[in-house]
Length: 209
Image (cartoon, rainbow, N blue to C red; front, side):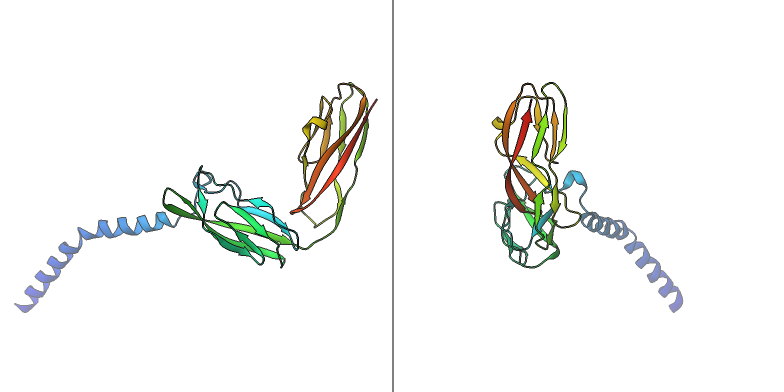
């Protein structure tokens, strides 16, 4: 008789637990979904990797994907900090790769995204070519380029006064000088070259005959 009661109670316990199982499973799956890495469409930052140079003042910004978003100030690397507006400032003091979680806040809610700072040793560099001859009506095909600098780092080139660029000519962010000059003349174009945050201004001369 006692065994029958034990079996009956065990059966009732199983029946009582069965309705709860879907709820437990659903809760567990919800927790797993919250831990899934963000897809590209859900990213909080336009770019999350930045290249810096030891001893060179930082002048870069974190760009949020949502308008009006702010950041929680934090230390990102030795000598580098982040302010509420997303500005990276300071001078890196130690080379290395730093992966730091950053809080991006909008509408009273915050989301976390990792930011990677690659801090490189200060390796001197210099521009490789600054003078480009050409002929009106003939395509240009040149490249500014650099000598030196940290290995594997791609320099960027920015024209700081577009009014100085001759008609038909272009200087791209990769340093390529191209286009078809519309008329003869001598042009001196100011360009800013940056290598992992180590920047310098140069003058590119275009001699068109």
